[in-house]
Image 1: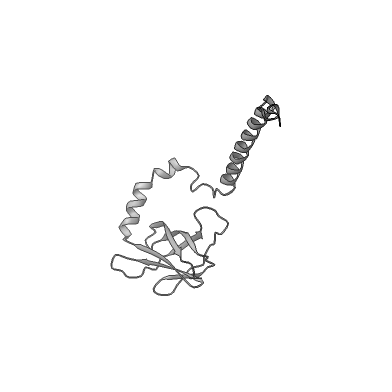
Image 2: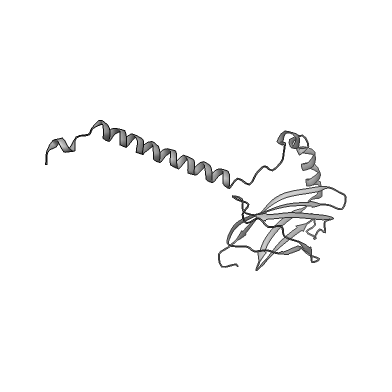
Length: 157
């Protein structure tokens, strides 16, 4: 072997340079694609306009004194809404979306039915963390919105 065959030439440096930047750009493009393809979208069309009524909506919602708890029981999701005294609340209207925090692929719109103590709906739940984004309307017309975290442990399904 000669020492000339082991020299670092301009061609080698150019190949190293191009290869390194190809990897960097490839990784950046992959991450950008993944970020954009899993983004669920906007919560509100205009956040400034939504913020104008935030305090009054929060005050009205807190005045209801409701507590909300979501649980997974077999192939059902149970949503308990209770008042300050711990008594079940029957709402005038309930709309909810059950899904993962990171993507909309598993989103479901459970059809809740009040059983006298809680709202129950069939749901396909795999282990992990779920978000139940609910919007309930009280008998007096007050809107109650909350994101309730639901944890499904392994072996529970």
